[in-house]
Amino acid sequence: MTERCSSFTDEPLPGTATTETGWLCIENESGWGRDPFSGGTFAPEVGAAIERFADEHALRVLLIHRPGRAGVRGPIRVFVANSVPGETLLRRFTVADYAEIPGLPLDDPAAGEPAGPIALVCTNGKRDVCCAVLGRPVAAALADRYADPVVWECSHTGGHRFAPVLIVLPAGHTYGRVTEAQAEDALDAARAGVVATAGLRGRSSIPPAEQAAEVAVRELLGPVGPDVLRTASDDAGSVTVRHEDGRAWTMTVTSEDLPPRMMSCGKKPSSARAWRISGLITDGN
Image (cartoon, rainbow, N blue to C red; front, side, top):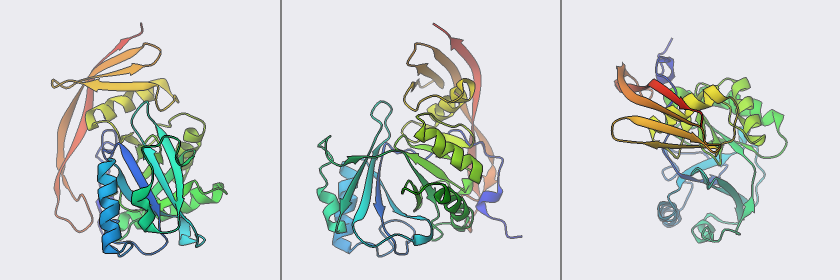
């Protein structure tokens, strides 16, 4: 059997979500390259303008299409997500041409159509075969459950060694090594206004140590909303997670080196880390 990067399963998931505060998801039915700007999706000048636009608004660009590439040609759907705790928002725009995207009025809070949670499953085989082979069945199974377009295949998100990888927007909670059932639970939970914890890597808009701490508290609490918790950390490795009801959990989060492994299929092994929780103290006041 060929060894793939996703064959290594000893790396704990919490604390491994790609760190992004916002997302620009652009519908595209053509083939993808290794990243959104390398596959010929955009004319060079349009791609450059979209890249500048995304940088100005601190957005990670993803290409998306409906599972199976069965999308209907017509207006292009564009989703813009803010994943910052307390500012969580997903807006949907439609454009007739990619060249319109840099002109989207993102500074106008009333612009765009408010959208409910969407699930993005990484299937970008040009970046890593694990995402394509393991992600597509999960995306297809999810899409079979929902008639409305809330499930999308997407380009590279980071962490293909954790394939199948799922991101739920707008909150940016990221999942790894998900089964079809876990992916369904994650999307169902988001649509119900809470966060599922099975396979949870962390929330993209907070640093890795805080991601790990937040996951630990969510596992203690069970399903609660995406924005009821806030995290803060100091240089000594202490992380505090506060609930909006006044409760708080303080812990030490440290990183531990793991044996080298492939971070991407075909690459030479490199070091990895695990985030470890210790000294958890609960303040119930």
